[in-house]
Image 1 (cartoon, helix red, strand yellow):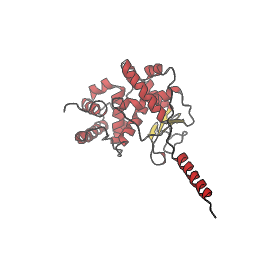
Image 2: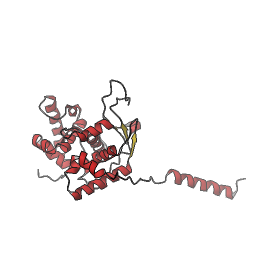
Image 3: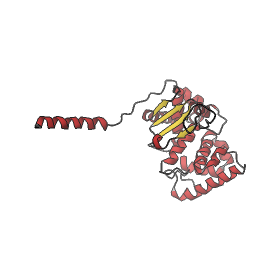
Length: 259
């Protein structure tokens, strides 16, 4: 016969299991390396161009981001520089957006170099330098250490793989992966943005644009590629692509530009 003590024991055991399984996720207080301001100044133009008060805000947001996302090396050593650059790539696109959080990201895998669709790191079919995961890799991003660093080292390039992949996450935040960040873009501008994306892709395919041709793959890639250019070479982008520049300012910086 089951006694009252046995019933109480089972109930206590169930409560302990529930508390263990459903306990709140603890966020580690990630500490940036002591020399991180030097790393940011040396590698991140966006940060270097900020005023001192703005730099402190940037540092705080980088630290908060790195405290909440797991970064794992896959046959690659994740060094302080890599973590700082990942944090910078995450914050640059959303720096002017208050209280932004990447709720659709829990882990970043860092590969040493390019990989293929089967995630192999060897062979001649390795053409992928970054990816936002789907399916089993939902809420996971893959970055390659080489391309991550090159995006910040080459100051004359329009490209930055880290920023590119975080733009994809922003795009996905509204539930659709289509190059239209409706969570940031006012509804009245959505049709105009879609048309502008298509016009940009058409110009690229005709060879009438300095935008990286990878952006002509789809509206999804077009949004990420032009956003890289917008943040990496802002003056040149504004000069060469004034209409795109105005729309990206509506999305990322100030949305109330006079029509």
